[in-house]
Length: 100
Image (tube, rainbow, N blue to C red):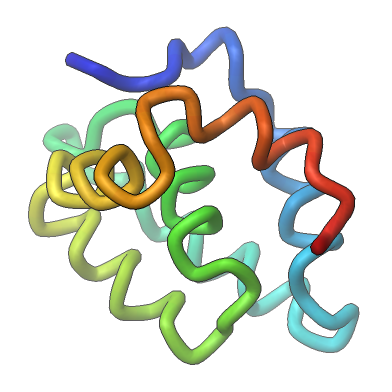
């Protein structure tokens, strides 16, 4: 599997990105929607896929539901999209970005 190791992405990383990229009024709803991925046994590498979804939506709450739904269907589609759009080392710059 070509993804970020679970050990490299923490829940704190995801929380920081959610708080950075979404208005405070939407943080709980975004967090709850992201949490729906990783419940089923076939939904692999939950923290990495959640972070990839956040990278792909780039703060666009209206796109979040669709990307989470796609991840639930096949997590590989999300990884392919994030790799195609941002390259295979997409996660480090995204975690470090200043919100721009």
